[in-house]
Image (cartoon, rainbow over all chains, first blue to last red; front, side):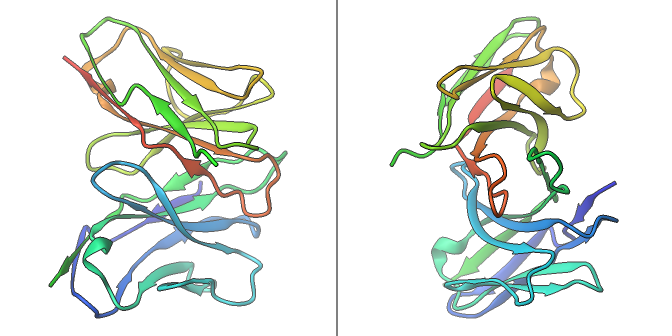
Length: 117
Length: 114
């Protein structure tokens, strides 16, 4: 069965520094997608970045980049130049194999990031 | 362009009662999924609707049911509420067969069962 593991319950980073949030996944299917979402205290899940299993290059979106190591089944999120507004819960998620056009996301337990001034 | 909207924002119910949560998908989206997020945990998939039919279901009892309307909006119904049903309920919408499978989430409905 597919599974997402986030081993860091909480992380601290100084403002303007970079931080890496870890995510490992488990699946036996060669076709899958990996996502990172940000969840502020308001509760809304905000999409950050996506990596497909067949993508040749690591995904980047502004200050966010995904360090995709397929052999190690890891998809770590790197946030560069942290800002105070980055303080939030961060979830790694995996889209189940794309069968029939219906798909669900499997989420990890999340990492709470605190950015200090 | 309106994103995913959910109502109500907050809800307080007592054990044994029934509740209905509502979701309007992002414009152009035809597939709606519901997730339950207990405090301190990641979201758990409840079910997904497309063309007014339940297409996939997670490990949730039959007390959880849903509906999708012709305009793609959706409802989540929970019967015989238990204390353990207290959670943030998130609605997500997407297009069937999108390139990425990305799901846009609404702000959620926080349900408290007393």
